[in-house]
Image (cartoon, rainbow, N blue to C red; front, side):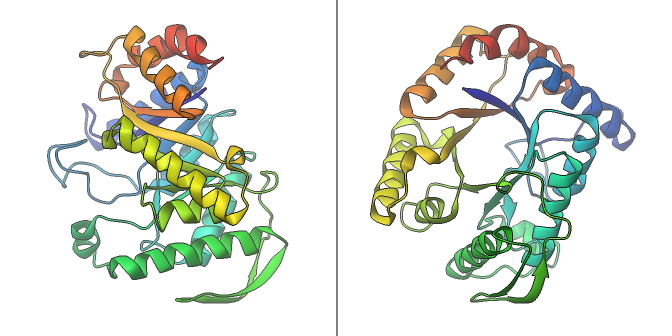
Length: 294
């Protein structure tokens, strides 16, 4: 079982000037502790009530932040959990992911989803299409990624955009390409796209164990229908843990064991007490070694 760290909040004592040095301590400590991956959200507003008190709390642009992480680390994989399809032109997004992969030495994921935060989009003046159109945009993005990474260049025509002469110059270093992670549990569209285009899925534990298992069962159903080997898809989860609160190393190990039993192989955690570093050190000393063989 791999363990990842999501960093969803940038509200640290000391304000904006403290963000850079605090993140440096977090990501270098996490890598030293043995975390397999590092993730940030793709938001411009903080998610009120979940990771902050207000939408005006500090929030960084995701790919710029991961570029900083790439320069601080050597081993941990890097990704956005997950990129909203409405925020960047697909061809530009591909160039950004390629760039991240090259500058990280082949450690990038393309984490992507249909986007959901309507107030954020409207507040920043970003068009927010209907649900059906956002899923069409998601599939266009996925088709473009597969077509582009199949060679050095491609001419792409999707339902909502075209790219007549898009190139890989330079090509990403990941072999055969950065892993495509699709976030969400939609049984008909999202999980079908995972089976058809994805290398990984991401399922949040807030839906509960029963619904997490159902999502995996739905994914397997789509894999069977499409002739895809279900075992080739990396199953990742997203959970919150608070070792300064009610969680203990033993309870976290039990949670990871339960995830492994369902079929997950990569558990990603966010932690409200992460900036204190003690939680990361506890993971490295007690949790990561204990779950490595699961």
